[in-house]
Amino acid sequence: GQQLNQSPQSMFIQEGEDVSMNCTSSSIFNTWLWYKQDPGEGPVLLIALYKAGELTSNGRLTAQFGITRKDSFLNISASIPSDVGIYFCAGPPRGMRFGAGTRLTVKP
Amino acid sequence: DTEVTQTPKHLVMGMTNKKSLKCEQHMGHRAMYWYKQKAKKPPELMFVYSYEKLSINESVPSRFSPECPNSSLLNLHLHALQPEDSALYLCASSQEGRGLGYTFGSGTRLTVV
Image (tube, each protein chain N blue to C red):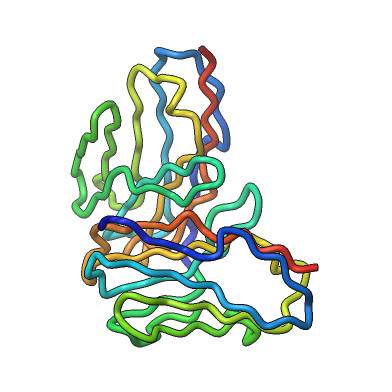
């Protein structure tokens, strides 16, 4: 099946720092979705990407669909304590399969 | 209404029990999903319903039996589960097509004893 690799596995950053995480796939994707999951809750969709090269922002979050269609990046600017959680990328079919996740810890 | 509601929030069941998980949405979404999530792991897709018909079954054991009685409801019937089936079971819904508007419920925390 399609391999979806997400990195880093975890990040420990200081409040105010910028964060970057990425996902790569072994094959071409048509959809990239980025989610955040808080403890005891279901994932919440942050950003959806559908076109190679697409760059989309949602507040302090920015995600890009790689031009090769095999990768995607999520950036968080000026992190705050409530950014803590697990961030997942998701890919085909139609964004239904999840990467392993990036666990983000923000120190005040 | 922009929510997916799952009941119960917690469930403890024995290996010989039969129980059901319920999921409800009133957003007019025509695709509904069941996921299983173990601790410190990503959600794993189990089943997809599209227009009330099962469209994807990810080789899930038959002790899990999904049902979509109408466009707003999705059930997961459980029978003869094993302790390793203990997990968070998540329901999601979306508009059909490009996967726009995936909305997840808060899940049912299932413990099999």
